[in-house]
Length: 191
Image 1 (cartoon, helix red, strand yellow):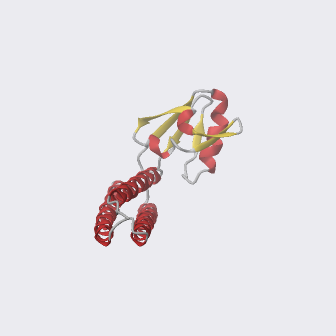
Image 2 (image 1 turned 90 degrees about the horizontal axis):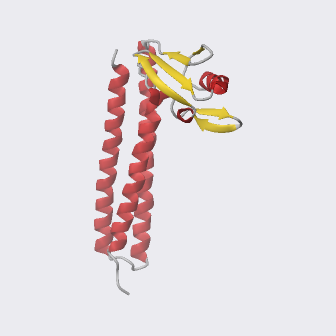
Image 3 (image 1 turned 90 degrees about the vertical axis):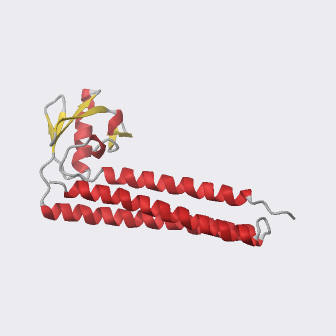
């Protein structure tokens, strides 16, 4: 039976794709953390019950930032204002929507030092979840490589190189996650 070193490449490619998705999901997760400045990203993916269908807010309205501390949501369908308002109130954003019958305004208060520290703790918690996810991807792919070696589909040397390359990928993406977290933390600390 011949071995196939391409299995290692394919496994590493698959692992890297999953790690990239983990970083992307982590970045999306961090968007919802308020920094004291208005940003459409905070509410874009908020789910609104629109005609009994959960719909992302960005599909129901234009979201703009007329001032640094204000977010304005202008629905395409005026009848969805109440549903949008309910979703914002029910979310854990801690913002009170101001509805004037045509648009909803969200005013972002300045963050207290205590709130900044709470947000930073939440960011660190999400970072640890991202790290664990990346390590789980490494573990699953190491198991796959080990199985390939047991079944004589790859050589022992291929397994060793594959593991080393997998560790390098893991280190690279853990470092990326830490960098994303650091940027968000700096954003939160900014007064």
